Length: 214
Ligand code: URA
Ligand code: SF4
Image 1 (cartoon, rainbow, N blue to C red):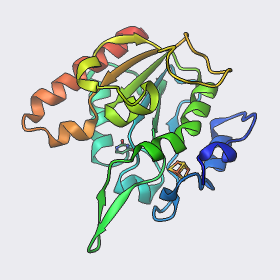
Image 2 (cartoon, helix red, strand yellow):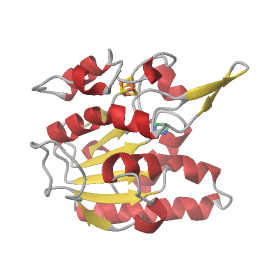
Image 3 (cartoon, rainbow, N blue to C red):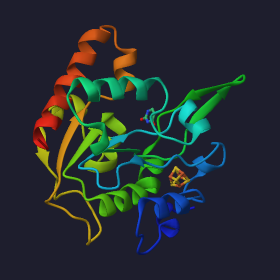
């Protein structure tokens, strides 16, 4: 398997069409152990697209992104930031769950550069169809997928950035019309020592996103 590209339709007309094609993707090894492809979901005319890391255990079982604890926290933060949830589309940099079995427990493993690169054609295809005004990058994996391996959330978070021309995109990719904003991943809030402060930080960053599309 050399990446998802061969499973991406040449001229997709809808997110649903992409999602159906992605269900059969074998672009990297992750499809072997995971339950199913977890594609993005949300408004087809979304102005804001959120990009997370990969589906978690619950997402893998239900087939929908951000329906577990991180998703609950993210929805709360979106609400507190004053973003209209009907204007959102939510997806992940990697669309199969990567885990390690410990006994009967499936322990989350961060996807590697190989998985990020393999899965990137789906993300590019989603953007090409959605043409969002703003992309919210949730955490390091999404940042690396979209902005390159040297991306650091801690340095860039909370600032509106023009879509980087340095990133490599296909010719028909709508570079220049999109803004980007990075923030911490909601799972990092759940793990933080000072959860309240981490949550406030996430909400503050998302308020910037809300203002950007107001
Ligand atoms: N974390 C993510 O990055 N994505 C999900 O869909 C769920 C948890
Ligand atoms: Fe395809 Fe992405 Fe799943 Fe790998 S993780 S098999 S590239 S959908």
